[in-house]
Image (tube, rainbow, N blue to C red):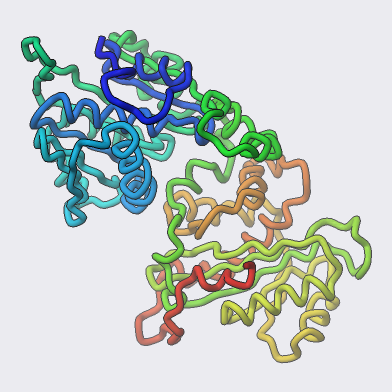
Length: 462
């Protein structure tokens, strides 16, 4: 067994669970999954293990892959990897090539390649090489077919050079980590059930697959004081995933899933500028109440969404509020002005003429479109879910409450505990943008917008 616990001079103490994970990472199994809640140290431990392997096996090559290149650059290249090097290998010099996205260790000549499986040309380049270690980060977002392609490149033969001993062949290792998805996912089938995800037959080499659950409570020494209480305040569904680190029961009839949102999510809002938007709409689901002061009404769903010049729809802001018409109308109008939107669209099934009257009172000449729900919520949401699955509708940031509601949509109906006002507004917004998504307008028809980073549009929030 390759002991990863004390071979380097880490400037912090590993917790007992992290020591257990390290022993697993250095153990005999070739395929090792660390799964569990957020901020539990899973990714850090695997990156540390790969660095250790690179430093003890001169000339070795290693790959760190995620579904999207932008995500691996933001989370690994800019954060976890340099942190691991600083804390655990402070005396080892290394260089980062930002053209190739490759880290090279000066002393050993070993390399770590960082890649995203969404970039076909780069993926082909990386997977044209052989590696001694491959790490699939956030593998809940990665298709099984992509995993199988990556496995074929786990083939580099290198030797570990110990002090005062003869070199020995280093075991090939395939590492995986994730916040647990549902039990239909290939990681659950492989690592928890020990079966082939495709033919459902028992794995012939089941002992070559190992997994360990690592949760935030296993990493208390390295977390902010209030972090656990923050997770405890999440919904039951999100607590199960991000705090308790459990695989949830499969819902094959679900229209939306966390894995789809995470796979296509835009993390760095500076990557998207205001001039990238062909069209922006503010959508309102008014919940059917005309009582200005009744605080017991359902929340008013207000969503800002845009159609990019890349033909992708982006959810830009969730302004859902529990308030009367005067308040929510002012919020919607302010969003319309701040984003330079093209249109306000609102459902009028329950509010009727009151909805348009409230908007017109707040701003008489604002472009307004009334929509009526002639079909059920699920039927309206189905085409939006199909676009989200394909990456044609994406979240520009994190929208916890909105995503919670969307994940309650199933083909059998809405299963959430509260009215899906945010989700309804989301559906109305993208229903308005759909025609353009199917066939993006020519450049000549794209309105000229001031090139301001999308992130600046949130400056009003302080």
